[in-house]
Length: 355
Image (tube, rainbow, N blue to C red; front, side, top):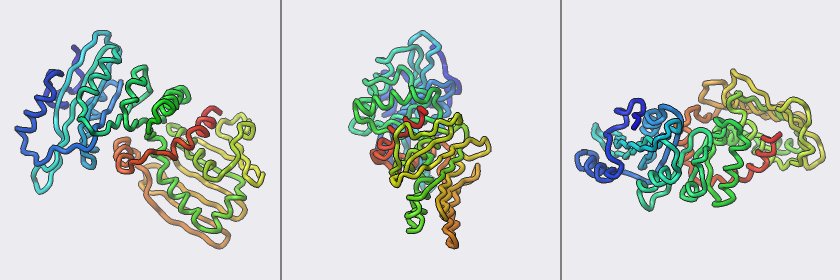
């Protein structure tokens, strides 16, 4: 059997068939006041070295969310079928003593076997608790109906995908089959931008100006173009603009789009990429006499909210979404919900993505 990098950081190695017994022994020897768990959180990756990276991530997540964590690392480059397991606990202090601890089971698998993969996960879940499954990287052949039928919430990051459209075919099929709740970190990155835009349009003058929008500018980092398209899909959905394919601009520039308002006027949208931009750097909406702009400098923890209506101006600041995947997952777990808005904009987003 192969040994993953930094195996010692994963805790105590135990035989797979004795995991539950070894966990009981671990808790009996520990001085923790509480072994807490409100959910099962599985983190799956096929990347080299992901197990110890994800162990550090789980340590941060369990500061706010008690869970049983299952880390699964799969090495498909090795044909031999094998599985090794390690157990540990992430404990956090209160008054100088261990207060709450969350258990972690790490699995290193080699070879290709869907049945073994699923059984490894499902055999070690805490019963009656929901399963949150964070799939890192591209959806491979291991992502099958027999897996996602057992998942309560799937966490993905579509910004990291190669051939995004094909990957979304698998997601839309899963949603169609089992009404799967999907938490896309690319969508989560737009959260505070959406809140900021909505709050600026609470202004009566700004709200009326939506009928007269002529241009929208969105700036994104090249690595996060998916987030920019999702933000555009959300804004146009909320504005109620016409979404027929023939009204999308046929300019050679793939970042150019055209829409039709309910008044029959044309809106041109430019989605540009800038390597010096934050994940989402700016969205600016321009209409007659009114400009609404939400922007963020790269590395900043704040958004700038600006509204210009003739002599009336607002210039405020608010929180920005994290750049860290671990913090985005933590935030998403805190919000919960069925993510119905994401499902609502998904068809139009896919249409724009195909363009």
